[in-house]
Image (cartoon, rainbow, N blue to C red; front, side):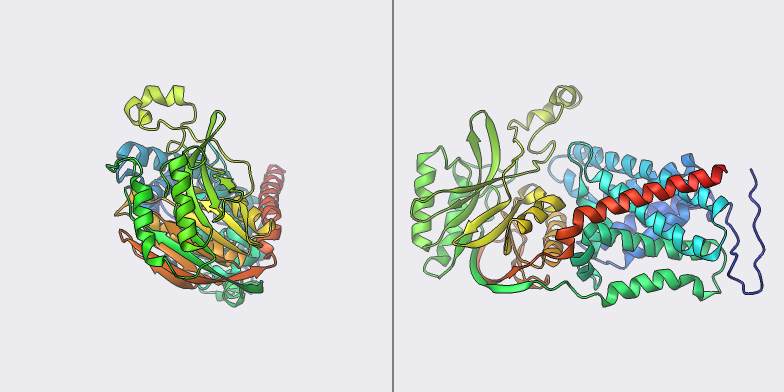
Length: 518
């Protein structure tokens, strides 16, 4: 089918030519997608070159636009494959290529499937939106919404999803990060994708000499630059001691029983005598169940007495028939222990979904995962002598609902515990640190992010680094963290923002389809 193009009138922009063909031949589109996919990884830590995200997404959309579904799937598969293979390389550091390539491959397939609605939006808008503003404003906004819808689906399915590499998270070190306190990570992903789609659309329709075609992306970019972080209300401060013991925390680390407890206790000794309101250890800092092991319980009692403060520790705990990855606020005087169980255990790391099936595919690898953690259902919140503390355990930090619930329940700061022992020598820990920093900005709360092996940081509510410890280092710090109250729009409206973007994008796509058929 041949789609005719309209000739521009005298003003040169009111009726832009409708692009009926892809902007790039298929061969060049594949090469461009591969390079752009690798480039997107550079926007995240370790490099953290955040402007490359805009270049990468713009090139990806130019390679995609104008293609039929099969071609769109192919170029998006190349882009997604290049990005996820590079970005998730840490998954194969100790566990081997199968988990790494399996996870990257699944993400690339889902990413490619999500490109088909975007390609359809380009195709159907070509037939129906012939005015300047339709092509240069409506189409980019719709494409941005569909990009975000794909992120939302990948972040929730299958097995709870994997929202690790959302576009908005690439901006933790950029001047656009403050906008996340208003619109959340999902909203920031939408705005970035819309800007890139606007630039790509301006290039596609052949009006590159008419800079008025860049009004929409320029306006959104300017809005992102001038938007300040939403203000939360100061509510005092709290002194947090935190310890990175650098113990044998990995799956394949040779460790005697109690080795992590010993390492963390030894690393804590320099803090004895320093005043603090709480002492925080990382995920897996206690390698026996203090709820059922009397020796471990007594060791924690003694340590809390020595530091004259409650301990926030983490251990695998057993209650009834279930095993949980649990954070425990351990009081110094034998009071009630407050618990939070990890809401999102890592699939194929902390439990095996459909074990009967995967056991047949990789029995040796699946056999390494002997413990099956149960997802927690309790609130990610504890009360520290009247101060509300939000919690997230490692993988939990990438899930919006865990972070939002903590703030909604009254958290005035966040204490995040993680274990990066299986990813020594990779940039996984730096990616996670950027996530923690973005959560500080999003919620307007101070954040202490403590890792077993590093890196560990303390962030102010505006994302400024107050203190940190590098990787593979034994260290302990006492840091004063500002407390904040009040909810940002991102926390209050986050679910509505994501739902509205998804519903509007789907409705827009359906309306285009209806109009194209007519």
